[in-house]
Image (tube, rainbow, N blue to C red; front, side, top):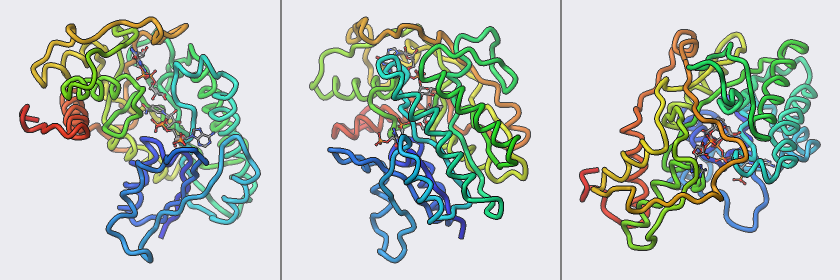
Length: 335
Ligand code: NAP
Ligand code: GDD
């Protein structure tokens, strides 16, 4: 049985990756942070309907800002694969908390790599680094691929560029099997409520339920390449099954604006978003990435990876899930 170690297991991607690895027969260890509120809601279902002796999910308290305990954990668990997904992942918030964002996303990655290196050469571990399309910033090239230069435009993106290069450097200097997944935006019903797609589908469901009258958004002209999260965690796993470590862009190759997302989501329930959406300057960023669109040809050729879910289906899945969460019946709208 293989053993995996996941930082960020309580987040959107970490929870889907845990589902995938458990289904593949792995024993999964995850780092969780102490929080004043319940923060394991996305992974609790893994414990349901399972006998105690069958549980292959183990949670450990830790933090990417605190390196020594991470080192001790890796030494104790001796994982075969490490997925470093933990981060302060909100781009807008990284402008308010730049040093903390860098501490977790940039130095936190370095702490993980150092912890991995301390395991010694006799223990072969494969390392996945959660790199981001945000690193391309306002790129001069469209679509972006593995050779496109990075032009980071946020503290978050700068931290991720540091982490990307650090993973490459450990690969070159120490022969570590470290791969970067340069993932474009990916979404689903477990997406954090303050990212734009989920904010829209959750806001729409609350409007339909009569709880809210308005939805306040920022730059709705921004364009992103949005995919479905379950496809993207499969790509992470595929990267670590390759003999050689490498870096891969993971994307759908199709770009839509926030306006397009609004159009699609509201029309599914027979509403016009213009009647409900207001622009609030609080949600604008000091500098924003106008558009991102990825070219995942390398992943398609080398990993045999392809996205399974298109934009319309993604929006449908998210709207239906949020209606259900508000105890509204999605079938009433044919969803
Ligand atoms: P997310 O939902 O925000 O989850 C982030 C995870 O990191 C959570 O488990 C969070 O714990 C944990 N975390 C935050 N600060 C930490 C710290 N100081 N120490 C340890 N763990 C910490 O993000 P996501 O969407 O799943 O994304 C996963 C990773 O992929 C992130 O690194 C993100 O930057 C990157 N990424 C995401 C996308 C995307 O579209 N989703 C695209 C490219 C790259 P709590 O639950 O306790 O907050
Ligand atoms: N969050 C948010 N809230 N974004 C808004 C809003 C709003 O009210 N209104 C408009 N937007 C715009 C943002 O300005 C941005 O241009 C776009 O919608 C997408 O914003 P987010 O959903 O917050 O995602 P992101 O692209 O900034 O970052 C996500 O994707 C990255 C990959 O490119 C995050 O998951 C990052 O962690 C990830 O690396």
